[in-house]
Image 1 (tube, rainbow, N blue to C red):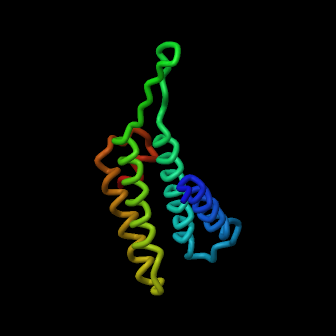
Image 2 (image 1 turned 180 degrees about the vertical axis):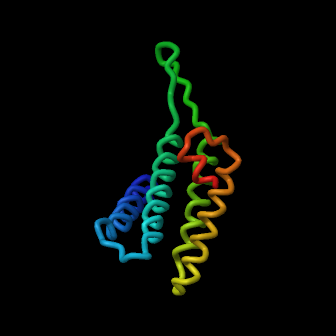
Length: 131
């Protein structure tokens, strides 16, 4: 079993799945569906980042003396972000009832806006969004 080869195949399939809907026109009122691709790309990037940082880094301090380091805490943070993004994607977009998906999507957007509303708004555009 080669985990790197398996992950590479899985990432390729993920990329093909994300791109399968690229360029399709959304009907008026279906603009919210575009965020399915946005979340999918976010998941893909988190997994790619986790793979990259889990490879670690080696420092050479002398002839033949190499110290390697993998930041397991950072890997855990990025994997958690990928899982949270996947759970949001699954909760919103994976069901048979479109009205339920729209409702969950609106809840997700509102929760994000509420989180960001605690940040300082310093531009006119960001102040208008908060109103």
